[in-house]
Image (cartoon, rainbow, N blue to C red; front, side, top):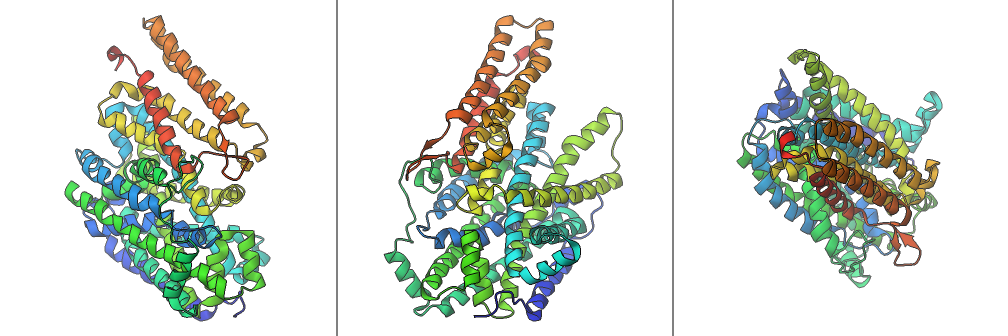
Length: 581
């Protein structure tokens, strides 16, 4: 086998050539941006097929491309992960096309949080925007981290040279490279460039998968057909798991219930995807984009097939000491090690470009979404309270500055993610888990807005943070919590006290001074205090017996239903009376 550190000039030419071509074509297709409407909505003139391809490219991130093969190939791995998409994604996209899209197209809005704000009030809008920013930053930081790990493996020699001359660790310099390219593509032309770039990157992503499958087929004695026969005998083709255990992530129950719930939030209330739907010309075209994006499951199945091939390849071909060391250090490095050792020159460049494309398509998406959210939810309202309006040219400059600042934050957090990755079976689970912290509260906000529960908006301001705290309490039974330096029960208690104090200061006492009934105000205060105490109890006793012994936390797909139930129920209970709407 080749020297694993070999990444030749031809490979570099392929990578840079493809990135340059993508930049040129996307810039030409995006056109000029003269207003926020152009920068954030693409002038609402983007075709549905480009939007659908962009959704798929964003959904199929580098996490799927790199981590899913290792999930399938590892000992005990199988295809049960596909349940979440085959069932959950189908049900969720049907709900989004029939319910959410028509609601969003009732008026021109820039985000789902504008919709919530119009129906629930400014406090709910600001809360939802903050939750999106938190969940988006955490989820995308995990994706940037994984891609940086891939670059760290494939470009070990090059990054070592950078470390010698700059002092930057390989993981940091890899993250910087990803951030620089993502910022450049986002700044070229806002969401229009992002959408067209994603469409092109989606094609590049498919090429990377195709090259990987061909390479695996060529290295197997019986070809891919033989690999499937062996996988069947080893039980790796199992697709459905009926185990009702709440600590297992890939079961029919998490797929039908939890995954559907979570994906409604991801596709419909997360600005990362919703911003694309708002770029279509009409609600009808937005529906087409949603339904067509279900084609992402075809791509996911192909990536899972790469994992089956990696399993068969490892069984037939002894791995080098370097590859074994990489995989033992982190299972997600198995596919990058295969790329280095089994692919010929040029093919390595194609697959690396595919992985890089998958990362950039997710990162430039979140940068555009975060920039828009912060601008419309924070900057513009603050200026209006001061009697000022943001001119179009100034708004564009502010948007671009926010893109750069968000990129710095994301790439910095990606390095921190390395500390918590060991608590998860794969980075795929990690990325989906951290993004699920806030999903339940966002779905609760949309449901309350859609059902016209405007008085519950005041309660959502307090119930949404508590729901996020509840998810944190559930996950705090993992080993990363030991590095916090403070017991999770103390953190949850402190946060609960702060939230209760804010409720008393901003809601309870002012309402009593205004003549509100003591019984209702005291009852709501007691209910919030009881809910906060329940969160502390979760931090203390909220784990489950693990199948192999010991204790385990609730599986991450259930985070969204848990958060949604807490946020919506408590928001209704803390709603203002009709006279105070």
